[in-house]
Image (tube, rainbow, N blue to C red; front, side):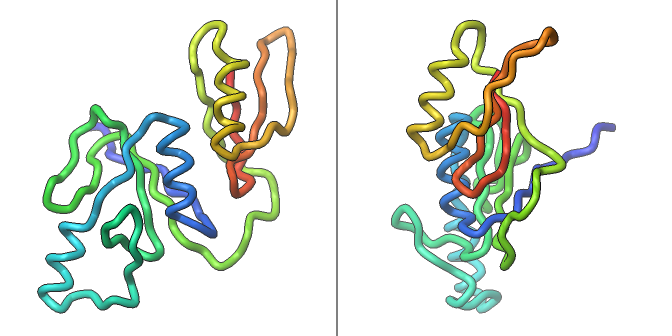
Length: 149
């Protein structure tokens, strides 16, 4: 049986990162407000754990995005498929990522995709052209590297 997984990324601004990556990947930002309301009503969580984003209650230290075609739990808003979770951490990024995403927009679309991602807040770090291929290394708004091929 395959193992279910999610990618977890440390962040200074989990909701900002979720917004960037939802737009970058055409993913959906998870809505956990129904779960939060249920937990608040039961006295299981307190207001200090929460924030408001997009007009709804959300976890202050966590935000997630999921693939729009994958299943999710309606009662919690959590994705059951391809999912990225952003968690608040106190320290900032200081060195190169040991893990990164490669985005593949399709043949002939790399340049337009790089421009679109720059418009969302990403920055170009370098252009690479080697015998094995061509890609652009970029950084998301918090400096996490990723490639566009």
